[in-house]
Length: 276
Image 1: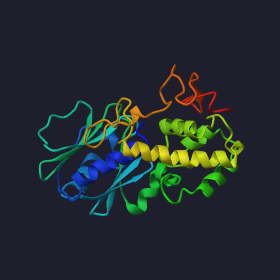
Image 2: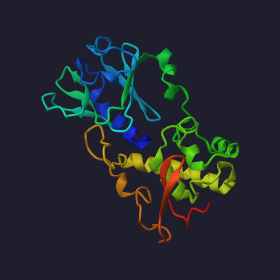
Image 3: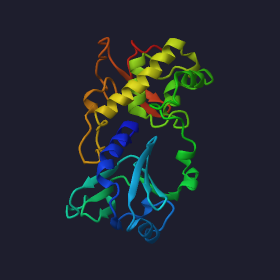
């Protein structure tokens, strides 16, 4: 599933290409992607209007329309938003929605697994999207302070990996970047959150922000499905230290890496560098 760096990369790659262009037509090829509007309502609400901004919140993208409506997109597992410079380019097999702009360019929503969603709402109804309503602070924002992070860990005995994946606590962090951050900080994924020392909390806080920013700078991680808004692969997969490296060796100590299920997710770690 695309995480914060991937979704942010999609946002940045679409911003210069899809804003302030009249939407000439909307074609919905998979109706169930729409969560709270019929196909006819969705088409009517977007046709002849234009996007004026795209904002990311966690793993969601919010497309603001000048009509004061907001199109909320969640890519889920395999969703892709791809900008095309020519609407005559043939559609990919798993295309769910096509937006064609008046200049002949387009935006295509592709989704092989068909789990992606679109909500169309006014700003006063954003709370109706459960994931947005309950979302925690953005880890690269000023509101995500070391003090607040430390206090959150101190008050909870849950395993640290599960806490990092909880979108109600930290927005946008997923399996890849939780593993990479825990490794950078030298913290075992099964440690109770309230067992971390102040030094470990500081290292983990810094690691989360460093890893996420580095991933954004490298346009995200492409393991299989993720693509930027231009349809290109990211490059952070070339900088991963431990994620997905089953049977590999630790880049820090040279020992064998381990992996196991932690809170239902496969977690990668070094038993030597990340002590329980």
